[in-house]
Image (cartoon, rainbow, N blue to C red; front, side, top):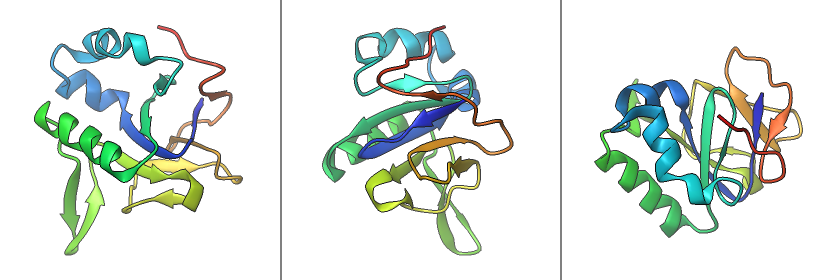
Length: 129
């Protein structure tokens, strides 16, 4: 599966949520329950939240950092995304390199590297537990 991209996308691998989010994946779903189908959706590998401006996307990065996630790291002296990734879908890609994320040819969806993109999950087709 793949996730639809829209405006500014904040993407986290569910595997990272399972190990780092306080209470794991189930608690993450409970915490975001009212947002699923609005600004939040997910497939079997990726969780997506989003914003329409840089300030709000920055707030998401800060909130997840406070939860124990490491958004960025340095590789060869350059910043890269680590536990999460910010995508500017209107401008065609990640704001920093992200080696675990791949994009559909049309740039309208993303999927976990090495997985089958298959069906696109988004606002109109929301994944369920």
